[in-house]
Image 1 (spheres, rainbow, N blue to C red):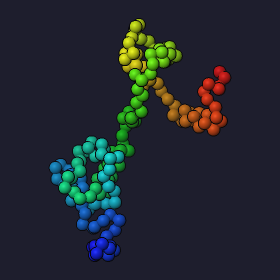
Image 2: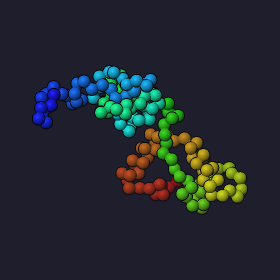
Image 3: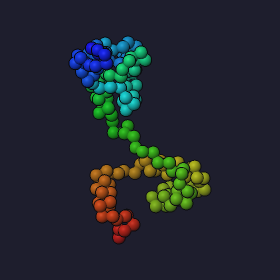
Image 4: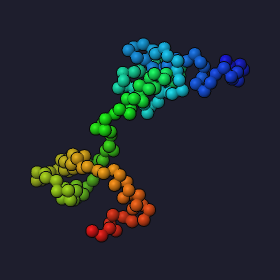
Amino acid sequence: MNQNGFSTGEEDSRGPLDKICCLQEDGFRCQRQAGTASYSKKIRNTVRQLKLYLDAVARHTYICDHHKSMIQSARTLKPSSQVEAPEIDFSQLKMNMLRRYKKYFKVKTEPNLNKAQMAETSVSHFKTIPVNEKEALTFFIYTIKTNGTKLDQKK
């Protein structure tokens, strides 16, 4: 309860005890008691994939423990093939740099490609390069700590 703007102790960190989950499932609002977890932009896509929707008339964004565990399970079970890698815009590179990339990695292309085609070919090749993350991170940290660059290495 709230008297003159002060809490009487009947509320906890979740707010009033009568709050119900703010999500809709199968067109109906969930009737479970809301927990401490709340709906945010971070989970928005996962919520949509589960065919859950934020109720437009809900006055809060707290979700029940049932939906919280559903969302957590969906996020942890995401296959590694769906992990989003950062996109690199090869079209921003100069043609000379694209040619150097092609030459260094020995990418087979048709002759006389324009810049857009060369960038597209480079992107598709770049996505196929396997990376040993542990080795790359170890080398990166070593390089930073020793103030070195890849150009300093002698092959």
